[in-house]
Image (cartoon, rainbow, N blue to C red; front, top):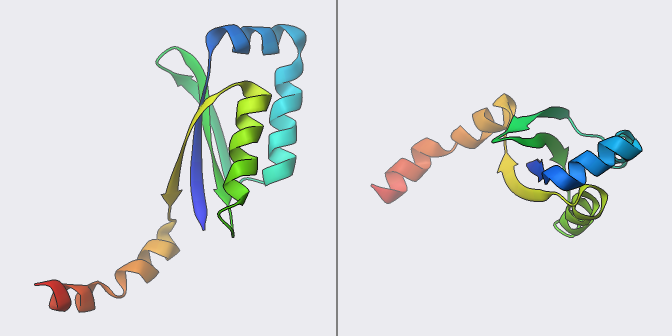
Length: 103
């Protein structure tokens, strides 16, 4: 299943990671460990932010993901299940049956 892990790095922590050059190493490690389908980085309400689309097959993997962002970046995170177009098409395949069942 795909998940979007969105993260926000506190300014002081981000500044220290940039000054020491560690931010590149942390992001490289995250990319190697989780092999995201996509990763984007941006400013969100003045904070260094971004999101990665990760595939997890078992829910315990979430602990490793969350701890990696917390320890590596001291980031706040949110995790949201997401779908691509193929997933949505498959999911909508049973909608007619649900409509009949619930209406």
